[in-house]
Length: 101
Image (cartoon, rainbow, N blue to C red; front, top):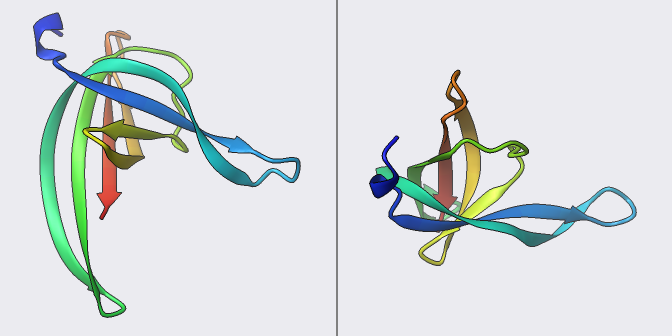
């Protein structure tokens, strides 16, 4: 992984839980550099309303503690983590994220 390709800034967000274990709010944990690839977009009709679904991948340096229940913020848009691909040599992570707008 070349450092020059990590041009975008993303913010990792984790859910905070109340006393009953329910997720109530999102808390910012880190702002990190990433290489973003816009994979696809899709328009669908759900209950009479058009929704736009977008899939991106974010390649970041390897870090511990990223779970599947987090989200990222990129260019003001929120994306839920759908899949985390870990490099066996622990050099990088590829986060596949999906958005609904």
